[in-house]
Image (tube, rainbow, N blue to C red):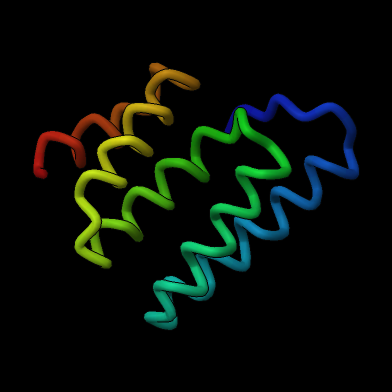
Length: 91
């Protein structure tokens, strides 16, 4: 994963929320996961993987337009994130 944080502390906060979001998604707490991925992005707006995971969560919440935005942002930040493009094509 690529990180574009200003400090290690901010990067760690972003990773903490990203991890929490993944856990909540696994527990089918999609609203909680969405909130945590959004917080991860707040701490690190260049966190492509967090946009990708948030996009996946938005699909589960039937927010296809929001998911497309997140997939586009993930690809903009990391063009090598091909899995975002694959999911985008499924919408």
